[in-house]
Length: 313
Image (cartoon, helix red, strand yellow):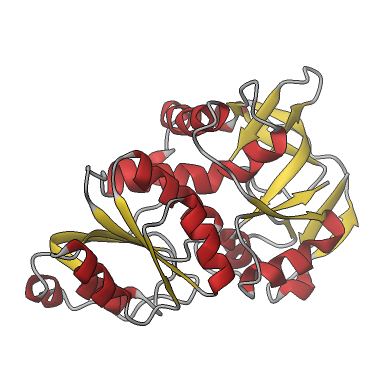
């Protein structure tokens, strides 16, 4: 098989395409022909060796994708299969989700991690209620576009932030009620729109947005930090939560909401069902061959992308 492997941690230059032996499936595993692998910030953290993603080296990067089970042809998708930047991967049966008719395999690969994340954020971390105003950062990214759609499905309103006006147009097309280009001033704007502040801030950015996000919340509002693409926020003094109005702060992980096969299939099934019904639009912002994995990482880290990036073996 061909696979993108690293021998050391570092920048995109450590990603190397190699010919390797096919993986040998262990107990409970099957071999899958990968048709598309998702490119995510967790892959960047794996490449850099950031805990908890630092791999044992050498390692094939990636964890998300979709393809066909060797020998049966079943179409399946997954969100947690180490070594997914490859033409073949061995995956535990318990970590596979069937891809329904009407959902292209590429779309299934593109929506697993980000779609499941957006779903639990809006249904569990802060269950969006009719009329809620929420802040969605990086709203033209893969999670942001899906988050915006799901908030609107639940009757909420979205104040989105983006880095450019072109990305702002994508956020508006996904349903954002208001867009702030850049991060400055989003708290004041959402307070003016809502009257009391945001019910929730969905923050995948971290250091650059966290402090202002606390001031954007209404009393008893929720700061939901699900990522940190700009770095981790400064340590939080708990008294700040009281001074801003008895706020809640959560740092959720997808692993919590997919920790059993039943939870995984329920969550992924709900997301794929919305896609199959035409209710959730999945934007694929870039397709790269395996040999261009480094370029995909550079584009992702450089904020030059929208929607989801895929590697196509």
